[in-house]
Image (cartoon, rainbow, N blue to C red):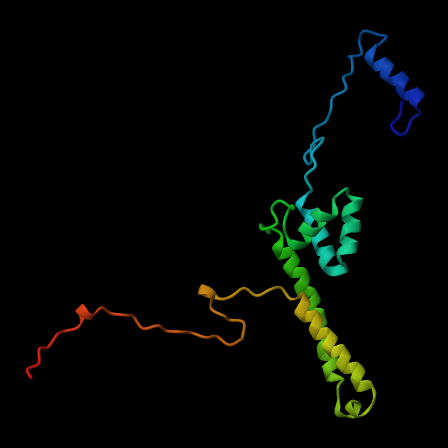
Length: 190
């Protein structure tokens, strides 16, 4: 019998011939399950690559698209929200092993928004300021700057909690208090 697609009747007939051979010279066939690498039967863990894709989809296309993608794979909306945060599950929301994927997606969006902002600012010329179109260009610039502000990843404070974000930094020095006994005593005669 040749290789290819066969009908159920032909398959059952060939299987019967293998299990109950007519001549004694043909060995008895055995059906052996093949174990392959990857997810085992009944394993419900989501692969990390899929978590990253769902998280990145949430950042780039929005939560609705990420939830729809997760639903196609049988993943809950709460898990999709956790993936968008960089976490691997809702139970480990504070741990973010996939944070770099989310940050790089946000940086790509912010880079494109910066390019559009610069284009809008370049087109905001004195001639256009006099015309009615300047309001539209200013609106685009404002919207792009808002996109950059919303999408850029949060900057962590500097070493020791010192503000390095460009805002004002206040440093207070408190003098040490000393006991009276630490000072030298000089007796004065009246």
